[in-house]
Image (cartoon, rainbow, N blue to C red; front, side, top):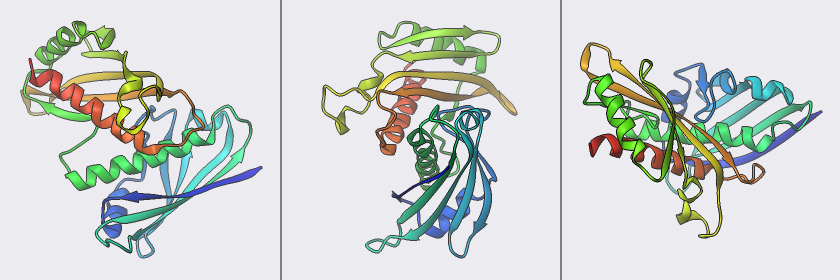
Length: 245
């Protein structure tokens, strides 16, 4: 059975600029899931009309849908042509309700918002990585020491050889209190896995990269902006931890 979900999303990039930025890659990985679980691949693009169609693939999709596609068109906002409005339509060929449609819609819209932010802030800015001014081994040790003594996070699965560790944020539901009432919890779980690798051509520096896994209290409540705010908070937390050492 085919079902559809449509809506609009405001972005900060100019329309023509955002389309060119987005289609520079044919395959995109969800910010909150591994590539094998959820990814977006471009099926068609029309730069003139600023329209893109993507197919959404991965193990999360195959459990609930025969096929999922999304088509979006970007146009300048009437009140400010330097910014854009993105209109989208998702098409689902349902099998069951193992993975809700809201999870899939939010994943792509969040990726679009993050791509918009990356485009606005420049090629050297990434929400989930940055270059650190320490060798990889030292950087790993500094993070382990810092997060081991932090009451707000719980460190797990620290692997010295691979320089990878996972932290669970104990106060994750409160990361976006400014948008919600104080007694509301947004996430019931949030884990961040950090990997540190030597920077190519400079062993005195390293690349810190992370992935985020979250579970919302209510998967049926759609609020893409909350994920972008969360991504900002996580980035600030990770960067501040290394800068204060």
